[in-house]
Image (cartoon, rainbow, N blue to C red; front, side, top):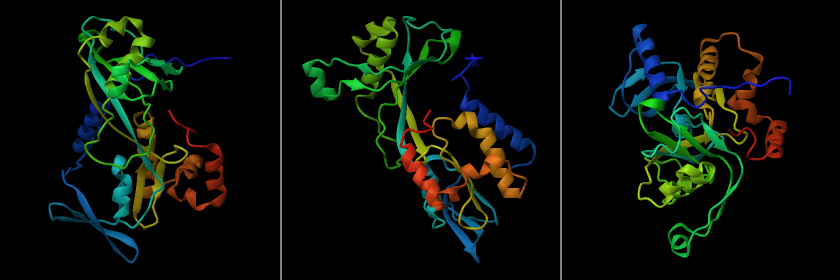
Length: 284
């Protein structure tokens, strides 16, 4: 190895704060915001002409960017467009580390090796027979020296799920994650016998088969998509936004733009490549 990149604050960007900053910047330049729900997209001559909202109001426009997160296929369906995306649950546990088992200045910890959990007979009755789990258990201090909260994450549920809100998580999730974290960080082992299992929350990974995002025009003129940034959304959001904006205004696009076009799946040779790569290619 000639060199390495150590991102010392990896995993510590606040998506909520970043989004709030962007909203403030947009508002300062004259953008307006409306809290509503898109229920229809009108077209005229095969081109976007208006947006219908749940409140009953309509917005006349010839440009629509669908950036709906896990609702991406649902909103695209209003245009009669089917996108090759699916969903996986992605949960985390917010856990109070009152005993300071993890140092507050600890980095984002990820354990890559598979783990085995020895359930008791009673625990098997409650949590099932699965004992071997894939690698990837995470621990991250949330607020550094200012508190005692940890995020515990382990994406071992990779079954495809239909999108529903709010999501429903595996009832054993917090139990499995806590035990996995205790194997990575033995100082957390006393919590396994305790009562606290934290608060489980999260959402969905919205993914394409090869885990490359969808950025660019859809089959209906004036409609564009940006989404399916599973596992790297915050990291790629700025570049994805700039790229879709280039499509919208007809700007000069970078060479790599073609690899993210929704229309790439129209190419049979590309679809064959995706099948050869398998389902885990590109996953972060």
